[in-house]
Image (cartoon, rainbow, N blue to C red; front, side):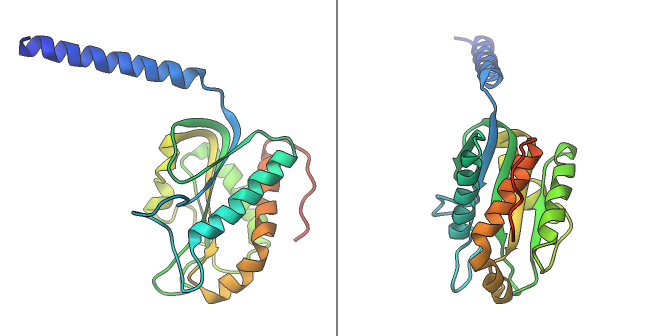
Length: 205
């Protein structure tokens, strides 16, 4: 087989694979909500922030599980996913995280999102959580990891928020956060349900 034939065969295979992917993507039904626990399942690479007492991954899982449980109780179609994922589609996707800092208590809460479609939802969440979380807030998308989160490309959602819920390397914040993890999850679930147009009771915090 000459070089021209090899090149033609290679590009033909690429085109067929692209067509197959587009067909698969187009026929995949969107899920109402995807809840991701950041760093869940990873043992190497970016395994999340940690302090002497706490690991971010464990807190992410606690909150993500509670959010998913509540949404399911409200009959909302939800899928719980770990850090490493395959291509998915959703109306709303939320990735749960806690921040870390080299200098303790230099960070706090923040939001990341990939597009203008998510902006208004992000501001509604910030308004809810700011009334509750009493510590530092960063501006939206204040780090490259927030602005260009890898899962934005893997989960095609109408609205996608990465929530940094506080700093796990700050003793003052962890003392406040630890007993409130499930309450924070209730607030996230309420925010999602409301965004979907569901009428659910606002949690008492």
